[in-house]
Image 1 (cartoon, rainbow, N blue to C red):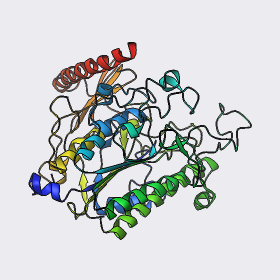
Image 2 (image 1 turned 90 degrees about the vertical axis):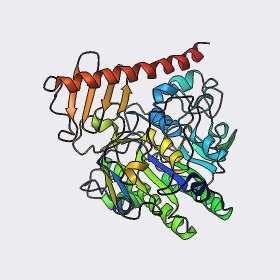
Image 3 (image 1 turned 60 degrees about the horizontal axis):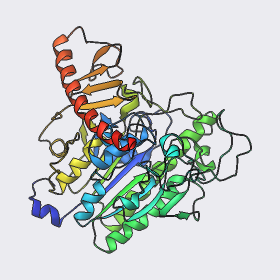
Image 4 (image 1 turned 135 degrees about the horizontal axis):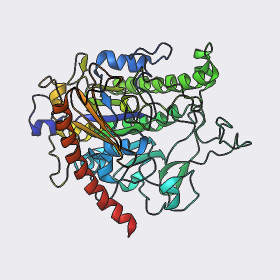
Length: 462
């Protein structure tokens, strides 16, 4: 609960909550993290005024699993969301939206969904993988998960003119597609598709729906949860002309990439200005992160930066999972704060419940922890390690405040992430006691996670 308050007082001053997330933005893709060219003045301002997490992690190295962790506070493999467009928010899960609605909040989700299909028929959206094979099984729209106001796509869209195909950008793109419908629609409810006001910057299109939701909640004196998940800078990466002009001295690919991120940053500034105008900025928890690291360089128009960290998206090396992480909450954090302890997207759920004085349900395992003790200076270190699984759990990692153990089929490696964030020096044989302890902890945690995954998988086999 908010610092120094009892549960009853927390219920009276319930903070508004906004979860902003970008798609494939790298650890180095912000001005405040030292990018030499990219302009992100509003993220930089958040860093100067609020909490900067120097080791913030996505729960997975790709999109859908990380998003599941935000909604549930549980490792995505426990929930069956193990890959992009594979799995959904199962009815057995307790989403953040459900808990907050029961506490009197109004809830909204804007932008990318990626946690289940929005329609039950094949071919209605630009699907692949499990969603394409069995859209009825994975039908899980936000309006069936206690989201009141919705403006979402099932998966990716272009970052400029989101409903229109931008044309051939990569080798696999078919010629002659430019100007045709892209294939993923914006939904506001069952079978309800929106095409009006969808031209230009996709982040602006999203924010045009999120801000009216916030205004109405404030007018009704109702606390709100707004999940704002930008598509930027996921492919197709398309920068608007006025934003590309800001980077005209750079190659075309970089122009597009930097342009869409600066356009997104502008919408973060717009959001903060609106919160201030409405008089609710102090009592609003505004979180920001990315769902994983940047796509590997060489992907069309992807010039994302890991700032020297090893690996990219799809890898549980640092570059694939360490992402920008920020929090602004003036009512409780009035001075800039830097947190060096590792934090992760699974921490959102328990942190928010703790801020509201709501205990975690006791009928399931949570992998996230409340970050309030770190935020109020009661702790400097994390209370329990973070586990990562990748590639059908063939790859795994176990991270505490200092060390990161990485295990795959062929080897076990140990890194001192504080001294060696680029993971260059393997210490597994140099400090065997640490390696042995962490490996035992990892295996025990992994066994528990995979037992829950098996139960979800059995539902698919029925």
